[in-house]
Image 1 (tube, rainbow, N blue to C red):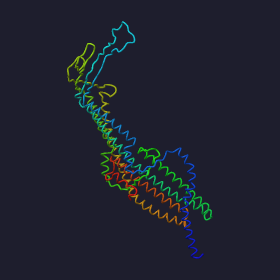
Image 2: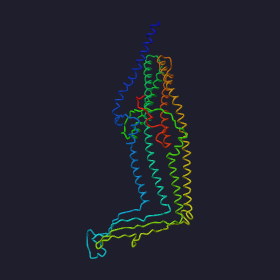
Image 3: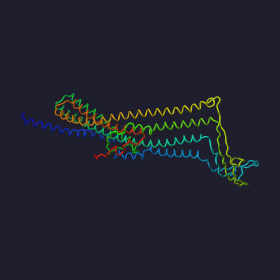
Image 4: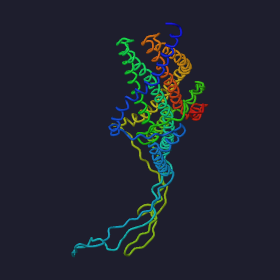
Length: 489
């Protein structure tokens, strides 16, 4: 064969191969179209109606904070906390002033009558209407005040917890948004991987019919195609589950499929470890809980100590001012108690000491238990501080590792992409084996997936760090720096 004929043959071969590369994927889609059409009516019976929705990161966060069901529940919980605290506040600081209306039984009708009616209810109502003020404690050696301070401490901490839960919701929305973005990218990588293996499978089937390859190579290419199909279906399924997770946070209808308009920005951690530890020890949720517990147990100890001592309570009985009415009665009267109209400041003593039984001799076990509870709360605070330092350190180690690996993976993906292009060209020309083609494609696919996974994990770890630090975002970052809309590159 002369040079001209050989050149013409090679051009024809290259053209045919390019034609197959373009046409075969469409043939695969066409062959599957009938099957998908036959299953479409059955699938609709077992799945939600799909609703596509475009959303940016900022839009997702705004919608979630407004519409999330747990957030609506938190609003009610916050109102209930406010009501309970106002009740405790007024109960401690103010005397209880009430309007009271009472009547004795009076007759409104009769079903039968008799001559024996000496104790019969009067037909005319008799009773009283007026103001009453409960016995008001003036001084109780701080025992009531210590109890009120505990309730106040719990109230403020519970209010903080609601804000922390709201912050965690924002974090969950952001993390789930980019998790879904990562799952969709992995599914897209799987689809591309499937397309290449599908092409090789169809291409080798044609070559087998021409007896240019052995049946073993064809079966191997078919096996690789089926593996790629399985991987794509699994990744697609995980992406659909990611859609549902985000829909739950945003309170969207089931079946919503999101078209994500924001792109993740890789930004290295700039906050020094010392600053993170300082903020964490001050703002961490578990540290705050431990500090509140320590304060409350100390007050409980002080209260227990004062209850053991014979300390009198000083109180003031302001009594009642009532209007009494009846058949032959109509009078206003003030009484501190029945038969007494004087306003007196009184001292009362109500103390008891156990000799034998619960609490121990002279309540020693009760006092010891209060002391132990105080020591226990202190030890728990120390434990939380040590545990927090270790967790912050582990997060920093992982973040620094990811920040080293991500640039390496980016370079690796570029190199493997070029390697795969060369391998594909060589396999097309019969200059390399199927196993080398498979290794090149799978190496590229795994590196691409690993890169996307590491990018997401880096973001996720930063938000875990922000949660442990007790802040909305790591210092120097905000929601606008996390992403940019696609098309702004």
